[in-house]
Image 1 (cartoon, rainbow, N blue to C red):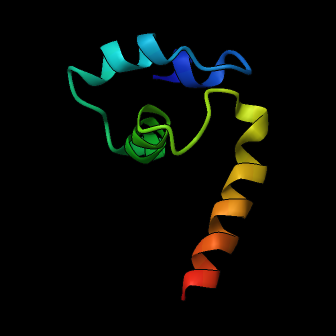
Image 2: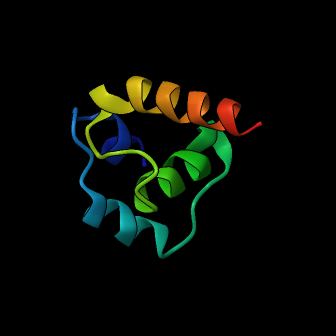
Length: 64
């Protein structure tokens, strides 16, 4: 998971999905990151994560 999630700016979703088939370890917040990416909550491009998360949190706050 370290190699797939931390080595490049864009995550290979196919490679990540193949790893997830065998289970996702809970340490280092891998499980939450992997599911967010595989469910298209976060884009594969890591440079977009902060902006996307901020926008989604603002949208959630508006619903409340």
